[in-house]
Image (tube, rainbow, N blue to C red; front, side, top):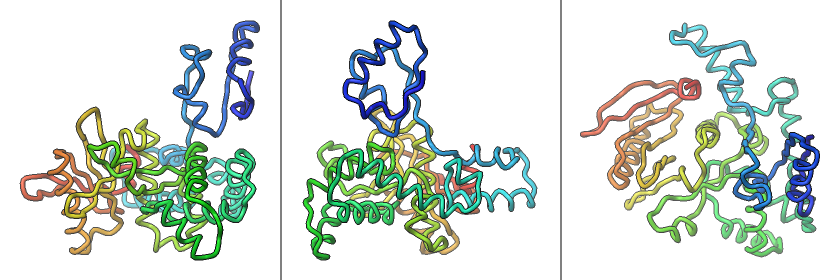
Length: 328
């Protein structure tokens, strides 16, 4: 038996429990809500379920669809094709229908509208459509950037749009619950400071982010960063538990800090063009400062096409092209 979006039905767990026990049926439950994750499921079903998170296609799946396979030795011609596919992935994301059909931008625009009305407005019975629409658009337009609910509230106030901070916080929680937006917080050894930090917003899919950002070349660094976050998230890491961003005492930033238990096992920067000496120094300084404060020596900078291992003082920094990193 298959049930989709059953979390909308009150006490659905009791019904499913009866079906399993009385009908001896194999039951599949799907839906676009984190309430279906094992940690949210009521006691009646605990120990009886196996939970999977399903994301849009990743890059390796996209390669397979296009008849390409990761190989140890890649010719210049094939590398060029892979980079072209990466650009398509950054621009249009990995939703199956988008990948397999033409008119990608039109499909993505329709997806954004469907998600706005189904996962936000209808599911949560929102009546103030103007506030919800402005908030929705601002979040997706600000992917891979720090943006606070307070800042959005002040912007709306300046535009004469009446709302409340609490309402906007609820909207953000709704979008996070529906797996549309992932707010990534700044790491601190204080849980209070983590919760009070200004989050960076990441979109579930680069294609959705692109609906609100049509200038591809101007946004390519942020699109790369969003793709890296989603790849980390798909690997089983969870925002604000295993993944954070970090700001050092002197204001330098590391894009991603991967935590395992009580220690960090990798720090990652994402930078499209590392050829400019000023840009390179800024990225390196951010990593090195974070490395000292978080006591982590596994340092990675993901670039568009620069590959190397370089010494930085007593530490080593690995530079990896995005296309190779995505194929691992």
